[in-house]
Amino acid sequence: MPGAWLPLLLAGGLALSARGDPAALLRRDNDASGRCTYSFTVASPGEGSCPEAGSVAQLREELAALTARLSRLEGAGGVGGMGGSGPRGELQRAKERLEEEKGRLEREKEELGRRLESRTQEIARLRATRCPPGTGGVPGRDALGSTQWEPEPLSYQELKSERTELPASRLLEETALGRPRAEDSGCGELAWVGEPVVLGRADTIAGKYGVWMKDPEPVAPFTRETTWRVDTVGTEVRQLFQYEAAEQLARGYPAKVHVLPRPLESTGAVVYRGGLFFQPRRSRALARYDLRAEAISAERELPGAGYHGQYPYSWGGYTDIDLAVDETGLWVVYSTEKAKGAIVLSKLDPETLEIRRTWETNIRKQSVANSFIICGTLYTVSSYSAPNATVNFAYDTATSTSRSLSIPFENRFQYLSMVDYNPAERRLFAWDSYNMVAYPVRLTHT
Image (cartoon, rainbow, N blue to C red):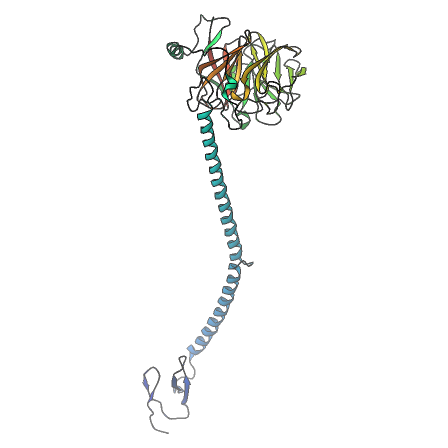
């Protein structure tokens, strides 16, 4: 209707008017919600074009492009998140691997904890039920120190003579002094062992177990101060360290390192009359290494001797064959199948290694932690790990009889792997968990 004003009500409720001329275009359409709407357009009488219209169209195109790109990225991300080849997939897989490894380690930790608890309970049970004579049944003073051995009835170790005990007043006096009295001289029976003195320490795992020695009857150019050491952890133990004196041992700087022609086994070696006596690895043989000639000068098999774990001391370590020196000469401590695991003691010729005489004791070798010989009497230590162990048995080769003892013996570092007597210094040399220590002793005369 030309010239007339047509009021129109739009969907938004806004009343607008339009002049009925051909430039006005009226549209009717449904909106997004389905409602019918009317709209119209009128040409501007003063503007040829709308600058912002192009910008709006351009923005719409850019928005559409961005929307499409975002859709593609979200699609790629979704695939990667489900294990695809995108960056998110790699991160997710790495996270899953870490979670799996964490779970595995936690399970291993729990299993190790259960094993440790079981082993601790087993040791406690054995200590409570299998303490040998002389320990008084005190927990920790066991003669086992290990769960690897199934002990036989204690009646096997019943000894022939009466128990020997020292008066408490004498023990207190000797402990306070810290050393034996000067008037003691010559051979006698062991009455007291003092506190250990640390003379050196190994600084690598190879020295957790070892043996250190001095020659009580040296041959020139060596002296009684010349000190020898072997770190025995390993399968090819060949290095023998030579020190001019114990002070040099403490500093850890050897004067010379000998390389043995054959590897030795465990901690049973000794130095005597210019030779290193040792057990070659994985054999029942004995060998003498001449320290001056730097060569093996004698070798002989020990008939029937157990070796490489058949009859060790209670701490293990392949200590089946243990050499020793006292005022009377060279000895070897071992066991045989015939002796059924009891300690066998033989006197040796230091030049030829021939056996001069043999004694079979009634002390089970695997029930004691270690042993040493003083004046022809074998003494044993009850435990390698209990801080307050004892010298618990003695076997006298002069009478071929045994007796039980209860002489305090301190394992300060709680892993005794070697102990030997040096008759020239009248001290016990020992290796206690990386530490080279010496104990003063006192003998009494009968």
